[in-house]
Length: 300
Image 1 (cartoon, rainbow, N blue to C red):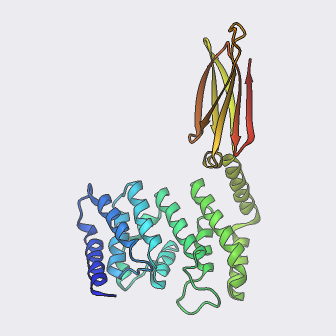
Image 2: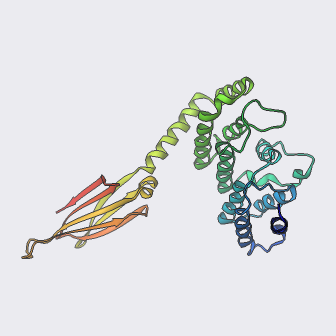
Image 3: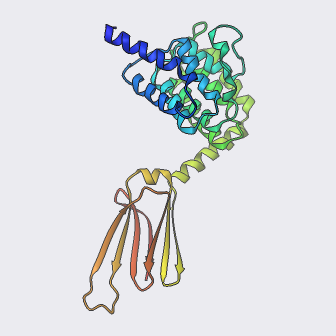
């Protein structure tokens, strides 16, 4: 590193280690500033005191947006094997009894749903983004199987969103990494599946399938309200993200001498869209996903 980079790194260290002293009402802005600095440092590793200062913020009942920013930093940096190992072993409640990382209070991992979901995304992407070693596990080196073990631990979480996110990442990792596991790891994996039970896996699979179907959900309902027809359109998440549009074709009332067809198109970004149309009008309403009609209703 040149002198400019050295100075920038010193400033980053100062920002990270001072986070624990920042007033609670200012902490989110400071973490966002740190996140912006880290984007200018590819493959940056945090020193133990920096890592501890950042992780310790999760014990201060952080807001959802602060949690997102903290995990954004953890995803952007290059976590050392020791830091990955600490994150994984603490979910097994094997808290470090000595060393610098033993100073962290890891209780934040136990309850908040937003922390659990971001934690799952973090450890899952450590594997999927090739940030963890492959091949035969060396002593003290974390592997993709270690991550899968933690995800299995979360399969029976009381919160459905946590269960499904852990199942989703476990499936992706197993599909891609299983062939790289050692014979001993494959044996442990079979034991994990056996202990969790085929019925439990089946329930998770069905829950995941139902959630996927809800993302592609399209429902159109109509209700007469006085002199209007109320049309309610509800779209799943995938439909809202895939350039769905509502096309309304209106035929003018027969009493009007000059007949004319009117077409309007609306971009859909909301989960629920409500449209009011006069009862006298003849209307064909279509919901389109990339020119394919996925829902249609006619009012006459």
